[in-house]
Length: 399
Image (tube, rainbow, N blue to C red; front, side, top):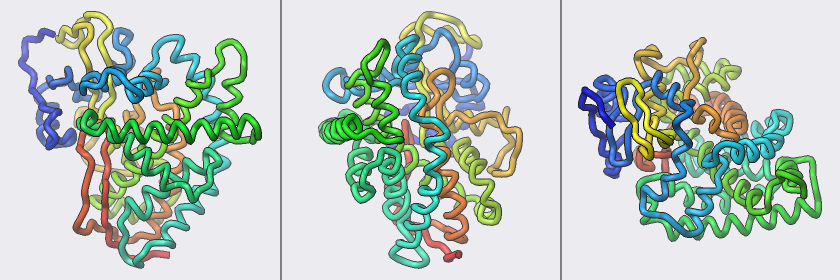
């Protein structure tokens, strides 16, 4: 990699490093990219938008376990199976077979259940004017949404939450240290998926899982049993992890912008816009990963084959060259954010996440007036995927 300008260097392997820090924003002003122990980090919107779709880059997250010294075993095998980590015809085949399960008709029919669930959880808060937002709302909401989608007993949500949260540790820089716990959780979710598949094969329903099981019926190009099982476990992990973390990050963001929270309470139709704006400025997926397939020059930089390229979602989403400073859920004409990735590998389940969060946030805004942080919050590392572990919040009860 050659360039006439020496780029900034970011030590992203430091557990104290923050991907949304002023250090990163200052690096963005100095250069469109920075060097890191993993490869390069793309910091600006224009370059991220173009490189996400560049034909000489492939999905790069497949190398994440190896970057952390994990090259074999159950987790490495499962990670390599993700549709996200497939390329070309194999990627198109899996997406084509799985797409029907994510149809707006199937997901849209669940919206009343999402609304009722959000209200039920708020009614169940231990205190009328405070909550520990993660354990009392984000955890059960995200896990029970998955249970509703998969037709599982909702009272089993703690199992989904516990195992999915443990697998989520794999997205941070402590992957290798946490590997035994991660692989234990993966094994338990595999057992869960096998039982679910067997049940729908014997008792098909008009639901999400049956749609996936139908895609595994004998025929050319069908899903294999392993692909179906791997996909279901990925759905449980990704669907839970993304929604739980993003809801916590949404509360963090709105507590910094109380006028916007009050507006959302008055105008619940802004729920969808609120989700998009939160994911622009405070996405749980902090970076999207690509790998250089062959040498090429881009914007004055020689990119060598094999180089990992991390594209920083928040840095691009708040790039002052493209976006006015601030947070505004009424803004129109925003360029798209990268909270769900982009290009051929955009998140398959984005419609689910958008639907369940856009129902939850307006109801929370109406019921939790004037929210403010209380002491005791703890957070996942601000790299890879992040979010709150604990988020105590005080508020004035609304109706």
